[in-house]
Length: 318
Image (cartoon, rainbow, N blue to C red; front, top):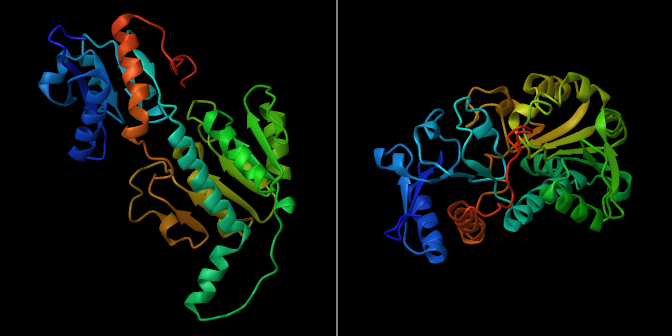
């Protein structure tokens, strides 16, 4: 940190909202002393040692020659890994904020329960003033697969299990999860869950191995009438293949918070598909009030040469 005591942090998020920058500045000033968050695009940012960013312009971080630390404003770091000019020197940390785990698990439960209780069907009935009931489905008869069992995925799996669902968690390598969550891993485990579960929830980070993971082959392996939820990253889904599976009525529906292109273009065919519920990437928004402790700790560690929490493995991409 600078000798004058003011912490200068390069800041960028793609919302265009200056009130969010001021919110972060106030929260970090409470924890670190006086802070100034400078737009990453401003020439004054070139001397900053710390950067707090979300989808920064590619190539810009490489121009900050004194940079020691890059903090992603969310759990995902694929927006950073996609920048081929990303400097090797600075450490990269991602947010693992308990509030984000709560928020994303709430979003998943909301949409799982809406599917369980035939929410789409009853909303369509209401538009036509039809007062008709369907047989009520049981949680025990709708096994769920959660793909991505990091901090957030584990919370989601535990909360689904707590309300009676039979839940399996999938990870790249073998892991054991707290009972009653079942474990699956690797290609064989992935294929087995595709074939055996009724609800599929993607919470994976975006890496080369998860890009286009859910394609025509994956959707074909799912049970007829399965439901797909994506709170991971848009590029993990081949969107044309998902649309084809829905239009063929092989899948019963999908709930999507993330897309290959964001904002989702007005002409995108997803807007015209009634079986898709669209959310504008809001399943778990970063809250400076709860996340600032972690950001402040990372800045202190970078300034003092101390170990980091939630350090990104650049080789693995997360």
